Length: 360
Image 1 (cartoon, rainbow, N blue to C red):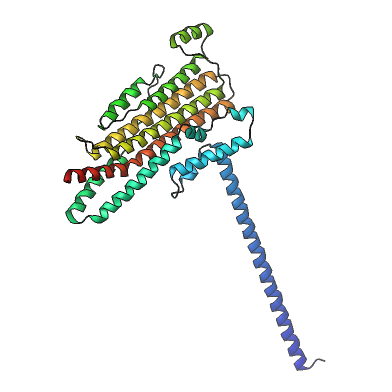
Image 2 (tube, rainbow, N blue to C red; image 1 turned 120 degrees about the horizontal axis):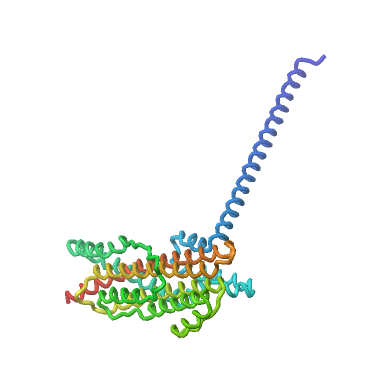
């Protein structure tokens, strides 16, 4: 028979063993729970990444849109990165099919769109810094008065709206109306500037549209119209028509950015009389509206042509091409509007320069 001391020691040992087992069980449960949670998070991360990949594959402009979410990046940086990705993809997949594939970013850069955008960003940053520097040197009534004028300059940049609806009958739109309207608006800036390059890009796009349309008509009528147009008629596939559409949008957008860049340079280096910086801001807002409406019109004209010549194509072939044109047109309008916003500090500096000159 165990003594009382031995019984007490045995009870204590059993309690200790129970605690050890309980503690071990707790540790095991915590470990399993942690593993489960960790595994769940890994699974969620995997699902999230796959979802992003699927979206990116289905939406060619997703990466650009996602890039614009990073406020630390300028538009030119985002576009340059997109162009570099396109170059890498093209280098990795050199085939006859990919040679025909339209790469908006690369085309935009080929037309010097990136160069003009970067130059405009530099002018805008320098102008913004100059405005801030001037504001720190003013006090009292002078400061209040300048801030009021600068606020007036800012308003057209925040109130810009445009209706991208176009008329159903687009057959005869050769761009002449656009050129006339743009020229008339630019004259109101009262600076020495023209829209020759932008006008040529618009007319070039119309020539592409004309050629695409002609290939879908009967041969006899095609020959007659070829003589009238004095433009060589070339047969093209839906892929080639898509390439012409994206090329035209890239060139038109690049020329629009160039127009804003050249305008900014002139505003900073000329003395305009008879028009205020606020009025010029309103004019440039109208210029942006005119250009963006034309981008929308071009996209609809190209997709209309694509629908006609691709009537016998399967939906999975034609629909992505049409979607791509509308997507790049939307991106183009966004780039043009962003470039317009870069002009605000330039106009503010222009006003300050005029004020100083008048005071001397």
